[in-house]
Image 1 (cartoon, one colour):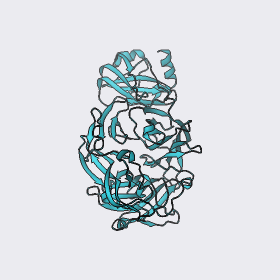
Image 2 (cartoon, rainbow, N blue to C red):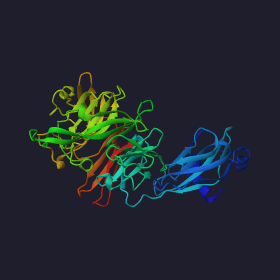
Image 3 (cartoon, rainbow, N blue to C red):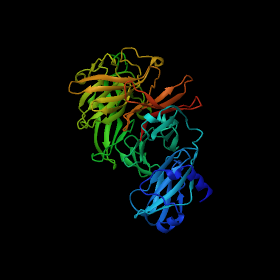
Image 4 (cartoon, rainbow, N blue to C red):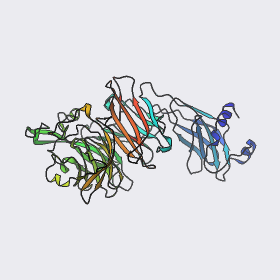
Length: 532
């Protein structure tokens, strides 16, 4: 046994629990009874866009299963080739902490259960993160109460993706264990696909990439920019893919659900948020479109919010020019930022930020089913679908404002990131930014009675994200992963944090990771984070 192999064995690598079977003590018995590895196992060079992942390649003289036992001297984990016995193996390896040396030992097992442990140890030196990456600081960590897994998110330098972004994964202790950094592609949103790949979205182009940097599919919005067609990308007949992308279950007739946009010219349109009598003869109004499409680019169904909601209802920021760079001078009427499907009835639940409302729409026809939001400025017939608030002395009721990312905890229970911009409906004066605050809040909805009550909220008034934000309900503990994505420090630099709340009332924080930058002119934001 080599010196390095003795060191690795001494720090406990071989004691990693694996599948059934034990390693014989005698080297001679291994050679007599066990299958053999042909040649030497080797690690492939990492992809330049994601240097913290590699693949282990080996060949055996008999059909076998293969294991890679990995350690950095503190953590130990095992990767298995699968449940098919074969002679050629490729084991994708991830989980390496940046800037850390790792050791890997290879074990194989034949159909009859005979094993061989390769005598040599492979070494993988995970590269440190680049110097222009954010600073990671874990401020709270309670492993006994965490919902463990990998946290994946896009970190954006500055406040827009155009300033640069990187897709990151961190482990349960907030250490970087994977990243994808493509200077030619600046996604703002990442989700996990059914097969384990990642789906990245920059607003016009969706990419499916695996953890080793290979691209497995691309889809682009071709209505606004028909000449923009990357090689091998599939066109989808929409204007954009903004804020939301969901991969639908396999039994659905579409593969993806996204939010797109459209531009309409509307007559006699208000141009003053506080004075609706001040109008213009014709206004270019941007509305959101819910679109479901297949992998071949065919659209299965779509619904325009301008047809489902009141296109003349304006709230604060409804007359803003967010899409001016895309459509030219235009009004950002709705600015929806999330859509989910209620598994109870298959209908949409949509966060409409510039209407300060969460709405439920019938999936097949787009019919409005209910509105959760401040009732002011909702006229008939839309006002007839408003949920009535139920007051609770133990938990006073407050409406959400400019919210993000509603999620279902259980049937009728919606948790949302309430950004809290303005906290007013015009003509009531808006709350000043320096007085504003954000929170996480759960609402319980009774659709039959048309009522809503506030179940609990988390936020003491001391923190505020004017943009971005997300909540995810974690599967094992019921904890809630929160993205507080656009904070500003006392020097005016943007930073973000990801924290995990327990489900009790009041919630407790069991994990908090802060991303910042020493350069006050730069800063970092996060649109959403998810735990897998």
